Length: 116
Length: 116
DNA sequence: AACAATCGTTTCGGAGCCGTATCATTTCAG
DNA sequence: CTGAAATGATACGGCTCCGAAACGATTGTT
Image 1 (cartoon, chains in turn cyan, yellow, brown, purple):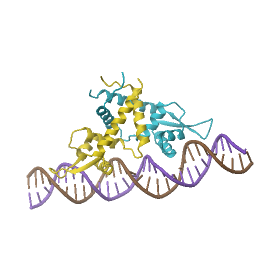
Image 2 (cartoon, protein in one colour):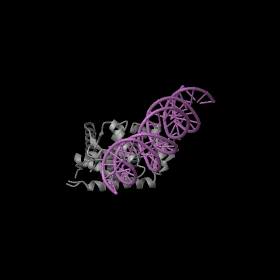
Image 3 (tube, protein in one colour):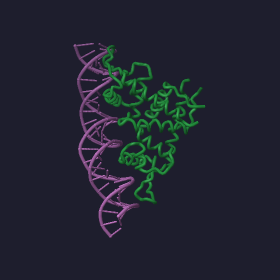
Image 4 (cartoon, chains in turn cyan, orange, red, blue):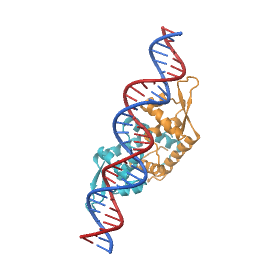
């Protein structure tokens, strides 16, 4: 069964999801941060700073700063690449996995409430 | 046919949508701004600063500043309530309607690309 | 070994957004 | 008519993020 979303449903889903995020969290992640987080959790490793910057079409400091922030939140962690010590590998954390899971649950819940 | 979104599909949709937003726009809207915009475009008028603040559980200056920003972008506009001149009515614009339409189209497009 | 290239980080000035408190304007109540 | 209440905007100090440039560390090249 394909996902057949109508424009009005798409907007309502977008609204309800963001609405819930805004109401719940004091500190919500930016679009860039969410994209970085989900890229790390959905795509196959390894993930480097340079690779993420290129993929998202942003500068490297943007990734560095996002890792600082989300590292502080324990949603992601850095690790040196032992094979090439210039690289930093971005890895998942338990707390990050739970956060991503919560995003998914919220999205699923809001999609179920959509009118036909 | 109900919208039956699995968690993995929800995450991919969330990722792909944000990814596209980040790649395309230099200046992307925050979660709060998107919520305000969609609230005005989806829910029935009138929309006041106070009403939006209460609905989103944020302070009034948050709404005022968001209206400044999105007003500059011409996505929303202010108008004095002639019945009660203390009120400011938040209204849609042509440019804002096109932006919202683009959001919907992007969401629909990404949802169609989801794996079964 | 010496130099260039790569990688991630840091620095810098500038801009946006935050919450709290305060303000001007308008309306309502006595 | 006068004071209280309501509404939205503004001032303030603080925090985060931005892009560009410069930096240290590491690796590859010759």
